[in-house]
Amino acid sequence: MGTTNNSVFIDSKTFSLRELFTDKFTVDFFQREYVWGRKQIEDLIMDLTTEFMKQWSPDHALKDVSSYDPYFMGEIVLSIKNGENSVIDGQQRITSLTLLLIYLLRNYRHVPSFPAGNVENLIYSDSYGEYRFNLYIPERQECIYSLYQNGEYSVPADATPSVVNLVGRYNDIAECWDKRIDENNVVAFTYWLMGKIVFSKVWTNSDEFETMNDRGLSLTQVEMLRSYLLANIDADARPKAMEKFDRIIRELSQIKLSSKSKAEFEFFKMYFRGHYAEDLSQSNNQTDFVRIGKEFHRWVSDNAKKLGLVKSSDYVAFIERIEYFARVYQKVIAMIQERDTQKNLYLIVNSDYGFTMQPAVIMSAVHYGDSDSEINDKIRVVSKYLTKVLTFRVWNHWQISQSALEARSYELCKVIRGMDCKAIKEYLDTDPLQAPALEYTPTLNQQNRWRLSVMLSLITEIVAVNSNQPDYMMNHPPVEIEHIWANHFEDHPGEFRDKAEFDAVRNSIGDLLVLPKSFNSSYNDDPYEKKVEQYYSQNILAQTLHKKKYENNPGFVAYMKRTGIPFKPYDTFTKESISERTALYRKILEEHWSV
Image 1 (cartoon, rainbow, N blue to C red):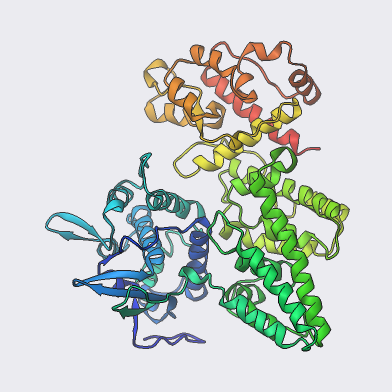
Image 2: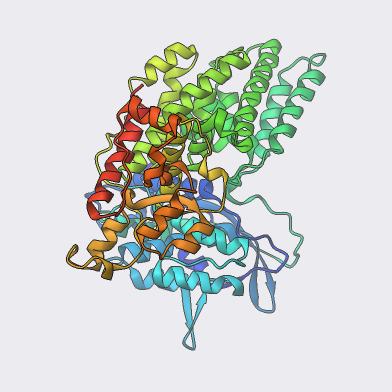
């Protein structure tokens, strides 16, 4: 096995992804569903990309990849049943890596020298003319086959949670893709993935084999941190400190995050990075940022003096600070989950966008000892700024994934530590995360449908709040993006060169609304002149298409006059109307963040 500097050595019992995935696996009915969330996919892509980029150089030949260090992905635990490998622990990683291989194959097989055949062999085998995927679970096969063949799958109403998550995570790969991997190095990355991603393969004949939690979200780090802190506290003070620490962990463990991550693990990672980390680079395994992510318990013990941990009372105070910021973390999560958008709109919008860094930035803004009112003020200031950054990036088709914004977000955390609310607002007014200008025209596609529905709901809510009619659309699921134009190219003779040009205009944001799914099902195919009458009974952004909205609606009319935003009704809706509505949506966002 080749090496590089600081070579990682893997023992002879490990198997590469290529070796492991040539086998086929089953999952017993009592095993859990595929439950990975967006956060785990983001972490996987960022971790793999970072490890690869540490070693890759543009002047390397493809054969140089063989000397790159391997990357250990943990244990795969199998039970041998009737000659088949039944997965006891590892199906989350096997499934997610299969989705990653499908994504690479579909998006990069056109690149010269891309090993398409090798990748296909790791996804499926041909069994007498039938596809047999490496993880064989009958109810998932139709979905996997469709993703492999088409890159998408229409999820039926009775789909299992696994199928829903498979489609969601595949779409997340595209949204979270780290652009450091592109056509210049994707071939090398794919060979590295197949040959240098390694697992420890364990066999057992027992279904009750005690397994570790997939993707390393184990409480082991928390337990070891607990042991370290308590061991350094005098015996007389230890019982009270232990009770406090255990209560913190018990309360955090009861939080159910949409990402499926363990809240207690996420809290410590965000807290230590946001409040204490100095070296936030990801250039090597010894930076504060990387070590906190992988082994925060050891990072604390190794940096005890820097953290002011010398005597027993220091450790007691450290636990008290942990308790305080755990309360802040719990408060933020509770506010998101309560979904009171009249009080916490921006906080909830950022969560709806899937921005997992929000609690870290807010916690860093809070100073130890801040009152509830001071904390609330900081939450409002920080979350509103983050909403602007995310929304303006979504408008411009920029990524808002963890890989795109994590480094910048933690740099922001480092700057605003200890600031009062006024100083934080003044600093955020300088736009440290560099929200782009609203230059382009957002266009609906398979990957950005959710983000655009959130942005359209936000635009709708801005108009509604300023017209004294708040009613955030994402609080009324199921909602869908509604095309104002019906999908009838033939109704627009002479306007477009072809159907593709018609689709591009129809999918631009000026032709879009967010409406209840029931409306979309009932009226989506109707001509505009019929739909506009129904729009008047819907949300305020849809109502603005109808002339009645401009009569006897003092709150809305006052907002329109105060801001000069060019609302207007439409008897007919043309290509020019779509351009005008695009400009209208842009103006709503620009005006909202200009004050």
